[in-house]
Image 1 (cartoon, rainbow, N blue to C red):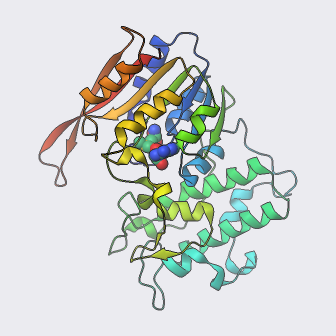
Image 2: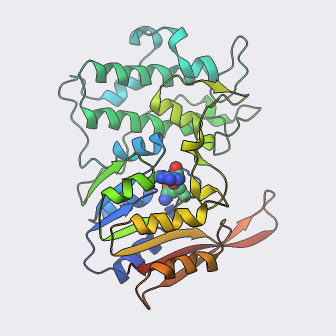
Image 3: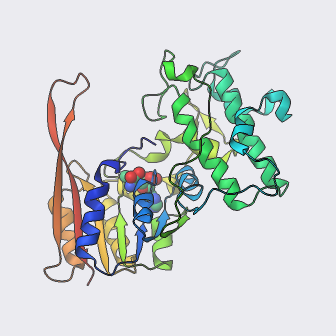
Length: 342
Ligand SMILES: C[S@@+](CC[C@H](N)C(=O)[O-])C[C@H]1O[C@@H](n2cnc3c(N)ncnc32)[C@H](O)[C@@H]1O
């Protein structure tokens, strides 16, 4: 999935750094796992991964794919190809009412609703698939692995039919051509029988003191954009909790407890210090961006405060960022900090 701050282009750099400097490493914490690409990559290399993200939909994506070693067999459900079955459902065959379809009621245009996140048919498909998965779970027809596998397939499919430019902070005012495709669930391609992975859905401050590993990999937000407002639709589909919503975009309400300290200029320094202090690990690897709220020098200073002497290093990976019309470009550095914790 395309994800703000996603590290799909840096996987080799991250893996290379861990392999080069942390010999004997077996267990790695990916404390801000987001789209899950890093955790999935590390598991594929044979590591035991502990992944975590504060967003529920991010947790779902990884719990239903990377956390699994094989595709679940759905023995109890008695349907051999559940993704095909869900793809073929209609309101009538599923036995649900249009009034209960939360995505259709709020995020696709009809009657007085003007929202244009989804074409009507796709909004209804999202609803009936989501409600069917919950119904199977409540009836004891699917186990936890099977539940999250289906949810992950749904969450992964939604961006391909969403009328957005990448995030859900706003919808487009004309229909993008991808929205005319029917929603289609496909098998996640990152289920592998190597290494191991478990995932959590907690604030890093609460989780870190309760777990331990050889390496902490931390890829926190680097600017003031909170993640929840940018992915509110995926969060609501994953939770399907029919939240109170507001504004033109139908944003779910969220409070201070859902705001990340890494996105706050006044809170970010302490957030880093707490994280490093709380981590029961030998090595720390941090991804950050040269345009982040903390300067490279300030973050280096924080790392050095906790580092074994001479163990600290910072690597810079430069790439060009183009402006909207693709003419002028400026350099952006992805930063990788590494140190052994004193
Ligand atoms: C830069 S993204 C991670 C991207 C990920 N490495 C990838 O490649 O997709 C940062 C993530 O941190 C999560 N996050 C922010 N604050 C958090 C906190 N206090 N505890 C746990 N997760 C948090 C956000 O939800 C977001 O998914």
